[in-house]
Image (cartoon, rainbow, N blue to C red; front, side, top):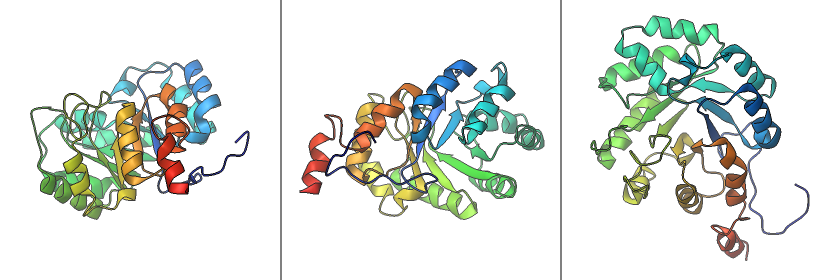
Amino acid sequence: MHYFLTDVPERTQKPREKGYTMAMDKGLSIREVEDFLSVSGDYVDIVKLGWATSYVTPNLEHKLKVYQEAGIPVYFGGTLFEAFIVRDQFDDYRKVLDKYNMPFAEVSDGSIELNHDKKCEYIRQLKEQVTVLSEVGSKDAEKIIPPYQWIDLMQKELDAGAWKVIGEARESGNVGLFRSSGEVRSGLVQEILTKIPSDKIIWEAPQKAQQVYFIKLIGTNVNLGNIAPNDVIPLETIRLGLRGDTFDHFLKQGK
């Protein structure tokens, strides 16, 4: 930091187990990636190449190399996993992970109907190859999953070997954990937290108000995902109580 301030909450340091910021790359050019990392690399823990954008991204290997040289792990979005699964190409998906030296894989079922026992079996198989992130929640706004079922699904996926579970929100933040307006389903979130440790969850929270909610509820070192590259620095200031949204929150804690 460039100067000293008292009563600034303490951030975990990389490599971290909590306080994760997962950024979403929806098709950045190589030059944009370089610019993004030159400013925000210290605050990004992992990057997701959104949904199946990697299928059509030019110069994919070059882009992955830029992230790798900056020490930022990258993984393919869960929709790509689903695209392979729905076509009965799981073995091909595993070969793609090897081809691109992916350290992580996301197992999700937000766009397809997938038997949960089978989903857990995919997690068990993939954990022998990579670190698995599993996503819970549907991309269908009409599909409302009750809290007890979120908890059950998350726990079973962690038991199957997922390193962390991701709470679904899409890149727009209007499904899954959130209402169509973007408002947090606060009762759902708080009930999940009665059973699942917060450091085992990455909450997709692309909108500023959503990020503020989770930081105030759980703390500076909450795991947040689907953060737009241009929002990484603003998010860090929210985490530190240096933006109006959390300015008083951490000062009151300090006093």
